Image 1 (cartoon, rainbow, N blue to C red):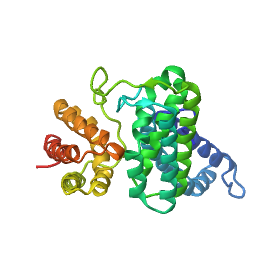
Image 2: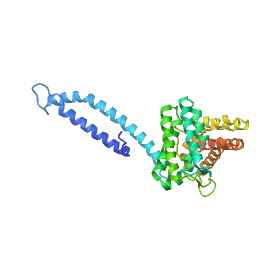
Image 3: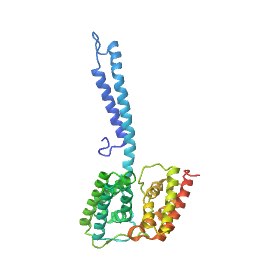
Image 4: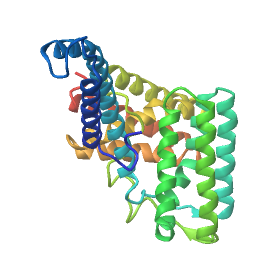
Length: 320
């Protein structure tokens, strides 16, 4: 609650100090006075210290917990907000038509049903393969030119949803977030009069990898997580080679995909070329999922991505 109005963690710390001082003053003013003594006397001071000590201990522990939570929450929130300050790069060159937006809205409805059934893998697969994810990128620039507030709101809604599906499924949260994204798409339909708006192609003037990818989770970049992602990415390639489209897509849209986003920022600071190679490989896979599924692209790029992740782990000192 202390973050209402975009209060910074430093501001939260200041509020906590004020609260602490008020508790101190109230304890000082209303502390018990020993019989026959007066305020500020020696006996009164000792009695007041005995009475106030537990209060100070509780207040200090509470203030510390709130401050730590504020620092963690504040940093996460500001990161998500800042990533939506600038237009998202388009992922496809597909025209934004009314039919396409309606298809994205229907996919969001299907995700709600899958979440209610407790099928997190189905939710993630639908999001990344039924165009809802790509549409949120493709529609951002034209929408931002007409209504910057709605474009940013849609971006933040999508980030919140991606964070949600990275962990255990919460059907009520999924339903709330999919409805929010669908409502934003509905507003965009009217604002853009979507009949012939075409987003720029990925290959050309706008590269979706020109800027660091936004993190999807706050999970640490550990050796175990990286090794699991590498193995699963290799598995996705093998499943594609064997003709198992559903299995290949399901393997990719889990943590291997999330990890490529989470690792992008740190990796760019160490080896920008490697980060770009990894990003382009992931984008190539994303563009060939769902109705545009291409087994050869999945097989080739999944193998490349696994190799890039292996190199990234060594560059960052996570793997030996």
